[in-house]
Length: 290
Ligand code: NAD
Image (cartoon, rainbow, N blue to C red; front, side):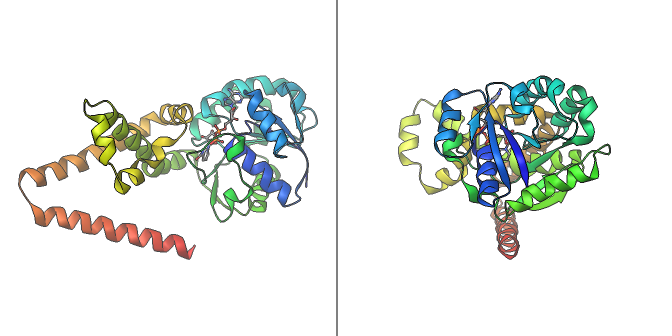
């Protein structure tokens, strides 16, 4: 049971966490803090939070758990502001999509509280944002990665893992670099490619005509280009070293396909497409099993 839960950034992720914990009867009071008053009012009206706090200092008082669910670059000023007001036993965690940057901010701004800062990342989401998009079932059956620090208090890590499990999630633990490398490949690169394709089409002279004929394939490939630009700016910049390597790898794959086209090599193309189709089918099958 969490007596006082503070959500900093009551958007899709923070709001959904609050709703899931409330639905599970695992929290007494939920306090929301954020940048947009309108969004906090929405969260209050929807019953996602019990009350709004205007300052992090006020919100931090006697909190059991503080969840940072703002875009990753906004975690740094939030930690800076929180630091002088944290009580000894308060656990601080985050939901950021990148981990090395958030951990570096915590080491810099929360050095006296580092035992109780537990980094996390729920692998669930959508291209929608804000409190109105939140729903209690978001984390049901989904993975949450925690990247605990060597300094972490074991009980704090266990409490954060239990918090996510209470929301129906499966908790995995791994080092922050491994996390950032994995998600650069399977999340950050696909988002970048999706944004790039839409940008490319949108600024062509015949964009209107192209969009008018774009159908299911284009819609599927570009769904994630509907994601929040600020959030994705922060993620791409925070993980840019690894993401640049992923872009280079992808580039080599495109060069390979380009050569096959130049050489009119249908057999090689079909082989690549076949491998990819099988790999995707096996991945989807594995997902259904889990
Ligand atoms: P969101 O836009 O729905 O919510 C973010 C909230 O933070 C908003 O309410 C916004 O008003 C508030 N906010 C933004 N900047 C702020 C600031 N400087 N100070 C205080 N409040 C601020 O975004 P989200 O999808 O809930 O993402 C939140 C975090 O979760 C991000 O770090 C993101 O990387 C991570 N995440 C997102 C997804 C996803 O698919 N959406 C998945 C996993 C993790």
